Image 1 (cartoon, rainbow, N blue to C red):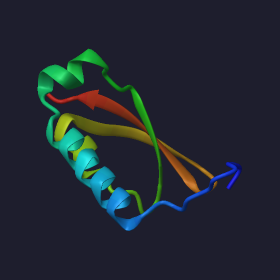
Image 2: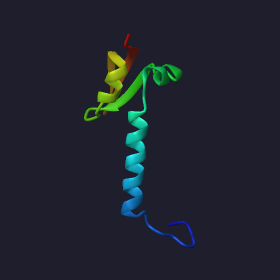
Image 3: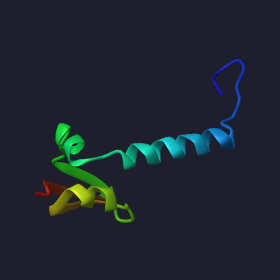
Length: 76
């Protein structure tokens, strides 16, 4: 909207990006996870952590208002 020639995002652009993101998620391997290991994850109650759970075990957690903080341990 700040552009002189503003064009809203088209549905096909949204669909293309969703496909690219799914390919990114599917490309993860143990080797790739080891390049950038996580120590913590911050979520809301309704967050889907199924992809995190593939590579990590969630350990201790603390509640901060509407958010949860989990410590992560890389699965062996």
